[in-house]
Image (cartoon, rainbow, N blue to C red; front, side):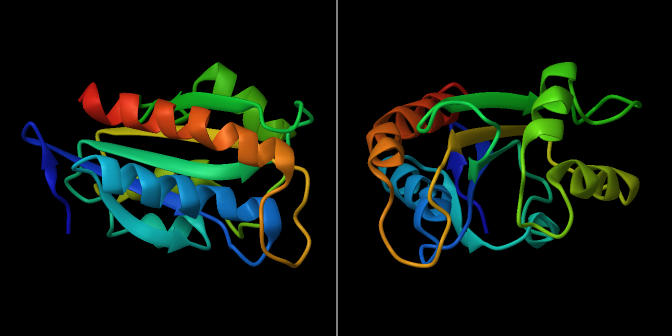
Length: 164
């Protein structure tokens, strides 16, 4: 179920687990963004495959996730995936980013986009807001660097929603 923002359907998906320290930044930012906008937060997601069926007919999907790319802790990156191209769904900057990012997800987001496109169920736009994490062990609470990055990640997500 989605709500509309000026007629556009927007979904915010937070990947991660609040029981894995910095991995909880995705669900946290997604929930806060939903409370401030008309976007729909589809709840914490454990795997990109969980998006299938959730983003059908959606104008914009924003995925928020903790990443490990080697950047300084708390770095916020916003990358748009090329959904409509007949080629690989990834822009060159995403392709470079994805090759450096480690993930606990079974299938990567690019693979899910390819699958969704093949069955005619991809969203119109997909943007990833990644927050560089450092602490992914068991436990609750974000590391100080990721905690400081939450307002920036939230600002970026809200801006993307209001621009639709």
